[in-house]
Image (cartoon, rainbow, N blue to C red; front, side, top):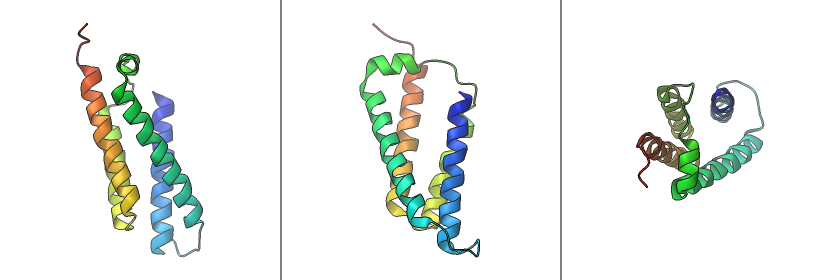
Length: 117
C-alpha cells in the first residue's frame, strides 16, 4: 500500500539522518539520541508485529492482498537501513532490521502460498 511505502521512506530517511548526524557528515550537531530512541522503539514494535503476524494464521490470510509496491522496493529500503546502521556502528538496530527483513521475506513467501484448509 502507498501509506506503507511512505512510512518506510520516512523511516529510512530517519535512519540515514541519524547515521549522518552521528558520523558528523552533516557538519551540525543534531538530535541523535532522540532519533535513536524513536527508531529503537519503532524497530522493536515492528519486530513484534512481524512475529505476531508470523504466528497468527488469520493475520497471514488478511495480509494476502496485492501490494501496489514491488517487493524489490522494500528489499532495497531494508538493505539501505541495514547498511547505514552498520556503517554508523548501531549494532542492535542493525540486528533488528536484519530480523525485520528476514521476517518480511518469510511472511511474503507464506502469504504467496495458497491457503490449505
